Image 1 (tube, rainbow, N blue to C red):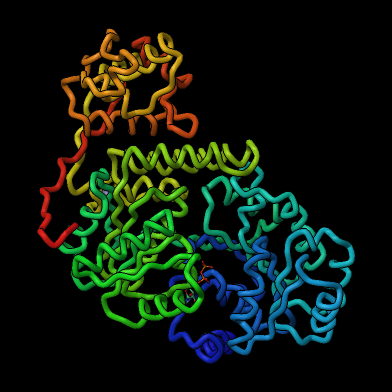
Image 2: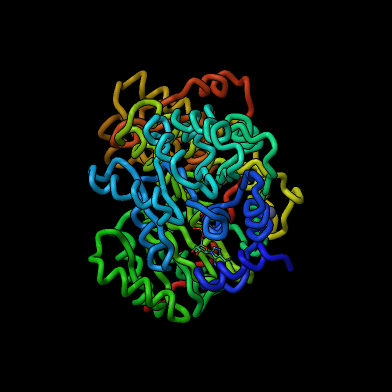
Length: 527
Ligand code: ADP
Ligand code: ZN
């Protein structure tokens, strides 16, 4: 064992209190401690921070961490200080005096780590300051922000190549959790790191079984999933709204499963109690919004369930990734339905942000929907999304591999549905959502159908060959494929540019057959 290795390990034990490095951490740390540049691609939660924190502590001088996440800097620095690490940050949230004091500490060699926002490094004054101190390592976090065609491009990142030019002898480490092959190349090139060693961790979590089921009665479906497969296990259930986390937790408790809610609207005391119970107790279920999970390192989370659709594949991967840290079999289970698609599209359309922001949100959602509707291996699709080669076409541990979904030719059904949308638009000028369209297709004389004379339409009753649930599946899949769209606060169905090719019979529509509904297992106790 050489001296630097033992320094790194000693720091891991003494400062951070961890027993062993994870995955490639040690190889990365050794490489950087020895003065080499590194490009690190590791999934969120994989343990990127130690890869630069330990070299910063082992090498002489201050480690400079460039991070765009200004809001997290205070927390990161507080956590390091609690471990006895001399850490600080400089960003726009500080007043002049605070910044001055930080700079003085850096110059006096009193800091192990200094966090900076990228825009700081555009200033000559910052570069001049850095030149007057001793630097151990430059860490460039969220390095994919340098990729111009990526989702998170930050122009300030382009100026970071200056670091290699001005400090050729200081090792640099660029880290990211989201990088396709192309982005990876761009990082290397734009940051000017041609000689960097690349460390690419696998995004595969083979012990997690991925399953996505059609949403019918989500709370009941969740309950059977938990009772059948995860009785007495600890796990996380994610919901979109604070209200539904509370309702769901109550429902589970009523049905004999110990569950507590967690969301940002609860007071800090309650949140802390629920979080520490989750970490300490054996089989507690936390029903949470995405506010829960950051920095939670519980190895034996046996399942992560989603009752609502995550906004992106990144989010889904991150949330499901909290299951099975110990490597034992775990389940990522999600119930997903038409209403999820309608709701998310509405949120994007009615939400804040400029046009570019909305486009980005829509493309994130599209990738998530593609994962939900795929007839292929979900793991293979996930890995491909993150730019990694799947080890096999079929993983054998996801629902589509275990029970391959059948597909069917939905061209005629799609034409019937789209024709109905066209009729309503042309003849009435009124706007209707999926419910009314399906009632018309099924030939149902509901009050609303009669009120608008929809039983007089030529399309009335032309869809009786499918059941209501099947029609909802058709609508959902057409939405996911972009062959139909929703608009406005009532979720009006409207045509898209692509709809024409279906109506004009220029293309076929392949749909996924809905899995048969699981047998109802309800008991009297359930409500
Ligand atoms: P990332 O930045 O890649 O998302 P972090 O660096 O925040 O991940 O690490 C994720 C979690 O894993 C943290 O709670 C961290 O303390 C923990 N962790 C990292 N490395 C180790 C290790 N070698 N042993 C135990 N826990 C670790
Ligand atoms: Zn699979």
